[in-house]
Image 1: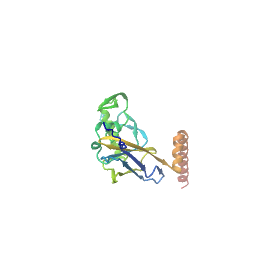
Image 2: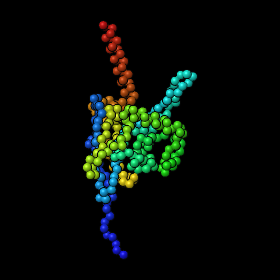
Image 3: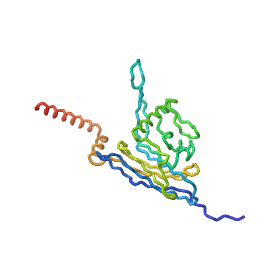
Length: 254
């Protein structure tokens, strides 16, 4: 029996980098444009898809809805979602549902419909759609309406988006994705995850760090407020009192 000694072709892989790894926020910050570019290495030359997901720091989201009580509109009991990313953008070479199956999208949290947001009042973990570790909330079916409201609010603020044509191949194996960070993007540590798909399966991925931070006087005030909240509150109160006293003296003299 003949033995094939031909070395196996190396698996496909993806490499990527960011045009900027730090975004410096000043008082005049109006947003930033960041490019993710990279290359697909595949000796076999199989058709490939690339998905780029940029996530911001997680933040709790408190949401309530209007209910009519005795003819008066009031806020309902609020629901708090933990672990919602402050910023989320998914860009891909084509629609995500055409790249891979539903279960894979759910497992990887790709796209706004599959974005993992910790359910409030968590009760148990089940296996659904062939994916384990799906949290089932005590809100029941109402959970999806609450979650949908969170996503819509973030979209309206320009913080959540998905672009089925957001990644383009500019040359053979070379791709580019552009990400717009709005002025209201949260401060903190971001990640840009680049995933290579072939035949509907993820075969390679890279995670790149991105930091959005305040600089100058804004940074000093931000750090003081977060590291010494009681002192910050006291100083703010004293400044407000001083401003009020100065204004009263000025108007009294006039």
